[in-house]
Amino acid sequence: MEYTLEYPTIASERIDKYINSQIPELSRSYIQQLIQNKHVLVNDKECKSNYKCKPSDHIYIQVDEPKELDVIPEDIPLDIVYEDASIIIINKPKHMVVHPAPGHESGTLVNALLYHCKDSLSSINGVIRPGIVHRIDQNTTGILVICKNDHAHKLLAEQLKEHSITRKYHAICYGTFKEPTGTINAPIGRHPIDRKKMAINHKNGREAITHYRVLEQFDSYSYIECTLETGRTHQIRVHMSSIGHPLLGDDVYGPKNSKIKGLEGQTLHAKTLGFIHPDTNQYVEFDSELPDYFVKLLDKLRKQGS
Image (cartoon, rainbow, N blue to C red; front, side, top):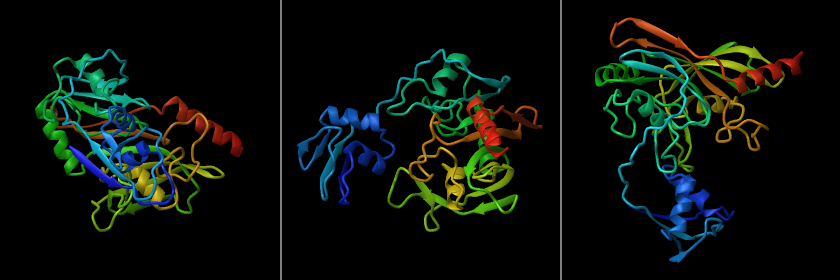
């Protein structure tokens, strides 16, 4: 597979970072590997990972055809909220990627599930994403449902499609609210310039609806609950940023220099998940505790406001 890019701006940018922003499916570590293997040329010449792009640079990237990843079971501890013959509910920690991808071939939730469940995972999404019905971001913590057979997977996927699954997230965001509740109804699609990001996109975006409720307010921050009616990529992060309340620690959709000491990634936790159980046909709901880092942040904000 081949890609060609032309660097468009005056401001210089590291080539690995620029390629990643334009081709987000290639991780920066993978791009650096391509550069090291001489699969990236700038103006028909080899370059280094720290090369700073110049206006009108012609960039050529050669990517080998994707190989079927050999996903290896790994003995990684799992925080299991619930498990039966058809489903397993996991409380995912921060930093863990859900399924393998270039640059993240190991240490993922799927690697851990293959060790724990052996062959008891649905096959609908293939060997890379066995049992995976839905995902949350690497730096988002919280609850996920995994399917152990194709019957359960099909029924839960249908509920996702119909928006009948209950999904509630807790977050800390910048600023305070005048109203205690609100709804954001704005379509989300790929950002027109920065392909690594999502954005409100009225032309090509897909319907996206987020309901939010203020749980607690501090001097400059708010602790909120967001209920998803749809499930678009980065939906809560994009929607809250669009109304001037980006999530604390979000270095993609938050303000510049938004990195908080000791905090990596957005303060977002998938707290509640409810659906019709594929075996019993009864509604079930699961809840997960807030992670320690989140609780400590709330305690700190409460002390500052007292």
